[in-house]
Image (tube, rainbow, N blue to C red; front, side):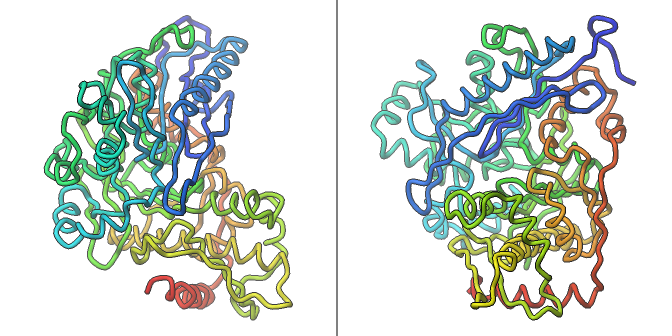
Length: 510
């Protein structure tokens, strides 16, 4: 039952922030578990070169304050009492700032950044096996701690701040929590730490040996907190005009896993956003990656109090970003919605004779084979190719890439998914969801409010801590069920399509 802690008769809510890669949202998650209002601000993503991806930490903070203020104004206008603040953020995006001034010293290094991918190859032979056993992931193509070490070595202002004992390092959640608490908390939550590439799964501790190997000073390490840790304290009331506890801080995909019902082993979710993430709960012990399946990572799903709930994850970096690139940068289509409308007019590959394929490897490939230098391709075009055919090829390529993730996670679990729910903004395309169900061969349930999964998941964790709900299960199972997309293809047709995809993908894996 909902526990009323404040004024009788008033609705209660959690102010929840979802700081994504391309935009920041803040919503009021009501004690019913639904979202009463969502405010949004876009955030710029910059690409200084083909490997670097950067953002402005000040822009992230300014946008976060703006959406929070708008959401709080809605709460006041609708007589909703806010019980706590919850944060979900993009993960593994690294920042460096000066504790004395609060000023970032360099642009944030975004999780999609691959500038050190080639350098990290040199570590794989020695470090992949021990890191996989300890961290649930190999060396990989990004290393925020290596980035920090290089900034200290190459940027005089960063080096000076470190020499003065004033340099702070962290991920987006670290930055926002530090700002919200007026500098009282310099910490990273377990679900965010797991993506940084140096988090010991079983010990809830930093892998100091690996961080030292990367050259990062150990005095930069943020404190490690549970996702609902009391140590975050309260936000500075001067910022938003309210005195609230910072009750939950999560990685965005982990928050979505909660909201989409991935609470028990085998329950999973697929969230389509800037990239697409497939996650599955695995229980209270980590399910480590297995030989022959690359890009599937073990991680803390979330840490609630002193208990860690583990998960597996696989992702491809370019889904929504591929659609935005096709529309905004190249001008091929007016909008992602137009891509879906046109794709619905074109047949699938099975039995149609179509030859158009799109491989959405704009930031490399992780699964089924780890190829960080792989590039995207649009192939099979002829004078008979229509815009509808190209649109269908784009959605087919995304769906096959996601199916590679789903297959990889299931193989690593050594069991099929018990349930697979989908969410995220790109999942709003009925055309894509039907293509996906046909290729995967499983029914996919699109959450009734799929675009707000991260907002709701972190709010649910905060609300359980604050007494709005007795458990995560209570609030999650009370939410309305979504639309189910059932497969319409036969196993033989699916295998034909998957075989054709593997043939198209093979040159990118050499």
